[in-house]
Length: 182
Image (cartoon, rainbow, N blue to C red; front, side, top):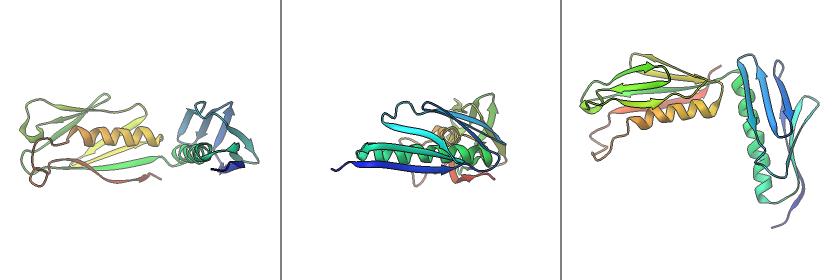
């Protein structure tokens, strides 16, 4: 496979957002907060600021470096979207057998009476993520897309039904909408 002499992706910095690059560490500050991320694992990829844009580039790039350039550019775009608008996942509590009781205790999402079980099931809420419960709806919000997505996945996984017919036991908490909060 041939190497490309120069590969680059540019990420535009919107108004009201400040981006600092120190080596391979990127810090993005906006109206909703600030996010920091270290890309030092990406050998051979360079980051720099130029005319209100973040430039992610690599020289003599093989397939791996080309992929890394696009991935890092996407991560930076997600950070900018996070500090300007934020992310929101919506989940729905569904049960047909036993009513599921849910509550938030600190950084834990507690699910009680799932399928009539005596023991509570617990899902971890990651730092910087806000979880709200309104009736049968659960909303997970935050500025870091990875933390928000992982928290929603933790909640969904905590109610995974094992050793039963999935067509009959559809009880659980399921993600039904995800996107930018605005």
